[in-house]
Image 1: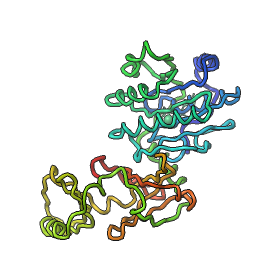
Image 2: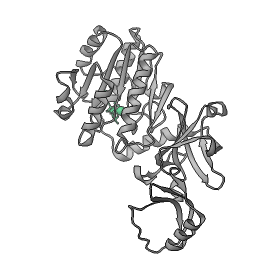
Image 3: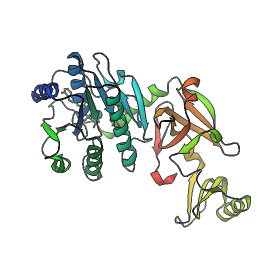
Image 4: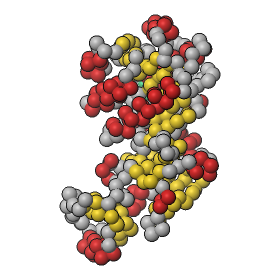
Length: 357
Ligand SMILES: Nc1ncnc2c1ncn2[C@@H]1O[C@H](COP(=O)(O)OP(=O)(O)OP(=O)(O)O)[C@@H](O)[C@H]1O
Ligand SMILES: [Mg+2]
């Protein structure tokens, strides 16, 4: 199931934009901005196809973590379509950057780093035109996120899809510095509910994990990032026993990080447990199951996603379901923890807060 498809039924102003893109000096970086369901991806697909058929080498950086075209969700991905395509899902990604969740909130660092690295990579690999598709978060903190993306990536051209003036807060500071073209939203643009978006993602997760198998990864041989779970020092058996009797927990794993405890635990029985969150962070063992993790190569790019099934803290082994094959996995030097829990049938089980882990 796909939202955005290749269509030539587009507002007239698209023709003008194409002419401008053809004439501009190459390589040319284009950033597409617009609110939710404003037609950003449809515009990306349209421009990419038209430019491809004119013989340009086109790269797409898909940074819409929540409604990715290029699979899978929760990553920022770079692809070079090499022939006319109907939807972004047909594009084979050549590099990914890990974000680990489906909303940019709390993950601005990952978002801007990923977009910058992949846009640079696109130029390095000889793109004439790089098109950056973005999320529909354009209000509140979304204004800051877009500012940082623009400051870092320095697009030559911003294409702003707006109904009225909803992007002006983002565009104003760049008016004198960057070429901006404001475009109309197609009258065929259709709004999708949260549930429809979730269903679309479900299909995508499912397709991505379709031919996965479970590997047991040795955590002693991998760097661990995206979590504080292995920072600091392991707590002593005595401290563990103390925490277990104090809170009636089963403690699987505990660290002391700059004077603060971090524990992975399960509750034994239900009774109110109050603890000072300034001195302790506790995560439920079950929240680690079905958590999305990234398998990262030595350059910091993401080889692919995995679903964490279980961590055996005694042996420091992680059971991870992934479509990567053994050879691809050999290039992983790091495992990075995300903040969304997903089952391999595509069902999303929930988001964790950034500071939960
Ligand atoms: N020119 C068009 N012709 C036909 N349908 C369109 C056109 N532009 C957008 N749509 C439809 O409107 C919906 C939203 O478009 P699209 O997915 O491109 O928006 P988006 O801004 O990328 O959304 P998101 O915020 O989810 O990333 C889709 O169902 C798409 O097919
Ligand atoms: Mg989109």
